[in-house]
Length: 191
Image (cartoon, rainbow, N blue to C red; front, side, top):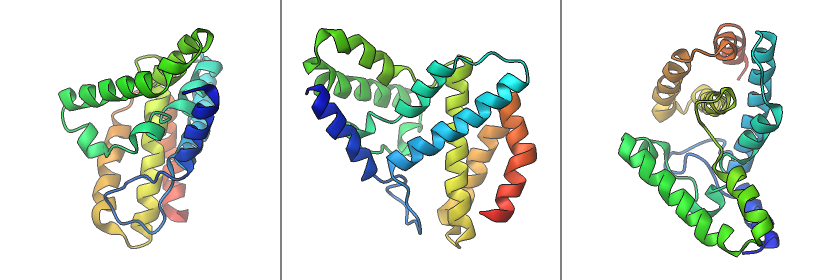
């Protein structure tokens, strides 16, 4: 696969839907989700800096923009399958790496391989930027659940909403605490 093939593959994210096993009134594509996550990550990053934390903006944007690019090759792997156990999570991550290496990176010119390897596999981790990405991804999922729940699609989205909300409540990030305290209540009224 060449760089041109990569660009064509990434365009497929426009047509890959999220929450594939659930009925939805409004299904977002992986591309829409990635844009939303990038916007949320930016907001959380601003809040973190306002709280005195140093954000590596280049790294945060790179992580947010590319966190689901591998889904152009694998499709959207259902979250409840991917996160069923820690072993399953690692196995899926390993498969995503193998597929990206085989279908994408193996045919890149050497000058691009390492750059794209870093872009594709530098996602959620223990860095501030990786944690911001993790919670931005969760916040977008909460918003999708909130929309569906408010449209009357309570099963399974009400349960998923509260499940993801509990993950957010466990965050130690200042920005997530601000989101939960100041922003989410307003969104709950308006979504």
